[in-house]
Image 1 (cartoon, rainbow, N blue to C red):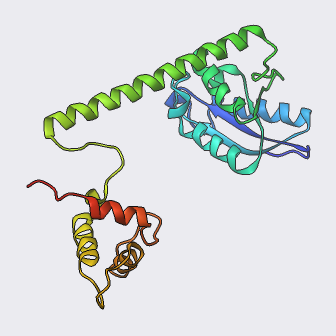
Image 2: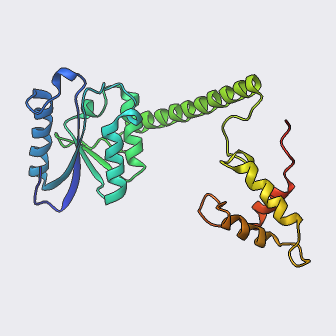
Length: 234
C-alpha cells in the first residue's frame, strides 16, 4: 500500500474472529481497501500496516501484539498518523478505545478513519470527558495492580522468609557471596604494608571477573557496601 503524498501514515487493521482471518476474507480486505482509498484521495502515503487478527474489540490495547508493534514503529520512525477503517476497528469498547487513543495522543499521533473523521480531535467535549475518565480508570488500574503485586510479594515473603522481588543486593547476585568474601579479604590484607583502597579492591574484583551491571568495575560506594555487609545467617 503506497501513495505519492507527503504525509506518511501507518494503517491499523483488526478482525475479532478467527473465521475472518486471511487475505481472502471480507473483513481484512474491506478494511485494507477502505484505508487505501482514503489515503489515496487525501494524498497520504501508507508506509506500513499493523494487523491484530482474531482480537476482540474489547481486548485491552496493551495486550494486542499488532498495536504494540504499531507503537514501536511510531516511536522509531517519526510517523505521526494512523488510519483505521472506523472507530470500531480500533476498539468496540468505548473505554478501551479512548485508552488507546490517549496512548497515541501522548505520542503526538493523529488517528483518522477512512471516512475522514479525526478520532484524536479534542474539540469534542464528550471525547475530552471520556478521555479524562479513561485516564482516571487507567491510573486506578495501575495502582490496583501495583498494590496486588506488593501484597503477593509480602505474602510470599511471610511464607518463605525470603526476599521476593525488588532490586537484588550484592549477596543475591550470581556468585555474590564469593565476591563479597573476596572484597573483604582484599581489603583486609595489606600489600607491601599498605591496605588496598576501595578503587584497588574494585580493580582486583574486576580482574577476578566481578563487574557491575554495566560491565565496568564497581564504584567506591559499592565496594564500601560490600565491606559493611554482615555475613548471612545460617
